[in-house]
Image 1 (tube, rainbow, N blue to C red):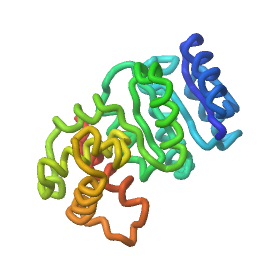
Image 2: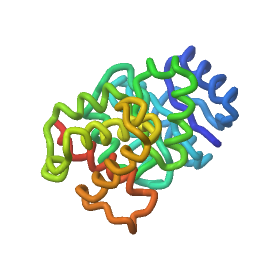
Image 3: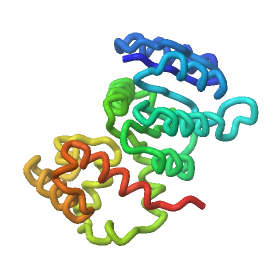
Image 4: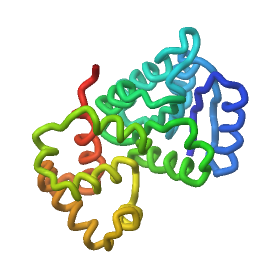
Length: 217
């Protein structure tokens, strides 16, 4: 897996490079600002871009805006955004631009190396990885008609899907069998009008529909 990394903190950037290298990922470029990120991504066309939200010169949303540009110009390019704090408006903007291959995690999650690497691989292969705290914040922003069709249990299952949990992980969290989880997920697909013709993409589409409905402030 080829990765372009953008992080202005030297220590964190070098730490991430070593972490990814140890996991068998090839970091083809590691940069410290958004303009360099765009150039590196255009040059290398990586499987995955990992970027901080706040980058020089203003340290506001340069990294996120660069990620949005890349998603627009290269829809198949997977992007995972790292943030120091829960900034749900940034997560919503990124998700609204995506149809899979997208992630938004707090930097604290890097400390859990196994889960972090799993999240990178999931995003790189077209899945999603949303920080549980981000999901919780987005949940507070209200509901749309399709989600009102879900039962409370189906809502719990979909929330855990948004966090990137597998069926087995959802079952463990909710004390359900994998069969019961599969039944709930089937009901979710039906209630969100996701037909079997969507195939394996239905899981990603359900998560994106769940999150994209939260309007920005």
